[in-house]
Image (cartoon, rainbow, N blue to C red):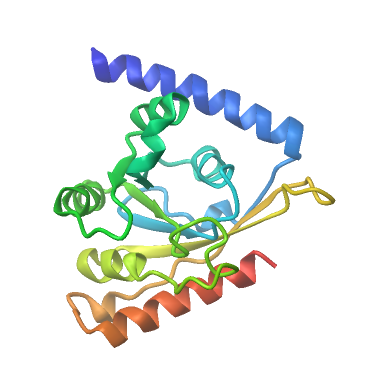
Length: 198
């Protein structure tokens, strides 16, 4: 029964967020057909603001779980959203086993896992190195990666455009633990994201 009510609340919140993004940010979605309708998939996007996770959540058309910083639970509102959308909480710069297992199980169950390779908002602008979490999950699970570029939503350009690119297949590297391979995949994914966000 608890899960039943959670689904109802999730639907109401998603509907509200979708309407808000449409009315306030005149949201436009491109390439939604590139997201597989079923089976495991990783969605990787650029991270500019608090709006990015909701944008992916309401436009991808799939049940999606996000990896989120544990610190976000300090906000009652964000903690509520985390529970409603089954966020996977992880400590920053930590390879917490529980979060890794939850993420892998999400993919094994044939669902979507969403990550932001920058690791934090505007990570590249801050000089942060691209994180290889997307690469790690891709080679461990064999899941395809759908790059997602988000632009707009800022002063001077309020209209938001979210673009999903064609799935990237890294199955030839499945099972690899080579850091160079992971870094190569992480760079390719981020390069695709940046092109879509232009």
